[in-house]
Image (cartoon, rainbow, N blue to C red; front, side):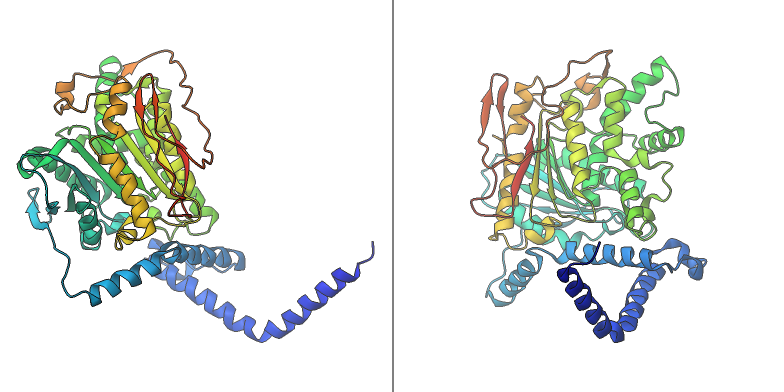
Length: 485
């Protein structure tokens, strides 16, 4: 079949463009290879022993790698990030008086020298009144959890919205994942023990995590259900296995044994741009040719025990073992926030956890997706409290932790724990994970993720449930995607 004149013109233009760009091809190729090789040398753990054997040579692999690095840079700087940073710096340089700092710094919460936290105290609180407490786990990557200073403006903004904010320093130089979780466990335990002393409400302690922090907050919230399941399963059959592989199950048991003092469940989780399936994340990174360069690789290494650190896989294993998790053993409110175009920790990570939490019938599960944004970074967005993105995030966080929010009401209407009841430890609750042969399917457990232009608060026979309001009124880039109600 002969060519049309349009095809001939197209190929002629392409050929002319190739001839014009030919002198620039070699410098561009050298620059691209230099960037990828430099990044490999600084981020690939294998480069310490044999740098020449780990440098990528194939053009396709180099192209995929540099494209992933470029996308990651856009995730961090895309959207309103630069505008918010410029606004924050301009306000900091031009205003005559600095904003009042309400933080009480360097409070000791554990035996180690690194065990310090900052407590942000809201102004204008009523005497004798108790306000909700938000504990922030800092760090977008697992190796950056000790950089709590970067999250102080965010904590001060949340504090000004009428809540106590706790910003602990966890981990340190050379600290592993279990050490970070151990420090965070002690910080949250300190909050429960001292909430009444500083005016907080121990019944409304919420965890807020971003990126790797969201992953660690979810792992922390699973301690009580996992310890309860293993304790009951070992009575029936010693050495019972929850996960699919023996190595992953042993790794999970080893971590749980390090937590000797079982904490009470928190009231809610606020998970922003998190990663909840480590094996799925590693496969995604392998497709992008950065499987040896990512923070996930440096933290978790091989895939053999990745299931032990995957909250989605753990919840799915509990469900497949016909384990029912009572409301007294898990957070009654979970809010997931993600950007649709995030290329580092993709949207499917939050969607998968959302579906699993709906399957186990958590009383109040909501998910919000910003349709036209890449990475949603609350530590950046809340630098400018008057920005549209900050207003949207503050509204969601406020509705999640407010005393009249759905966390308490949804639990009451769903047969869960009463938010007005005193907090209970695992032993006081006298609740257990019940093994059942059959479970009635929840008509909302596999609700498809779908767009919604307007959703109002609904009240059912089982009690009021919250639906997060979409932000098209003042933030056109946001769109509510799913809500379990």
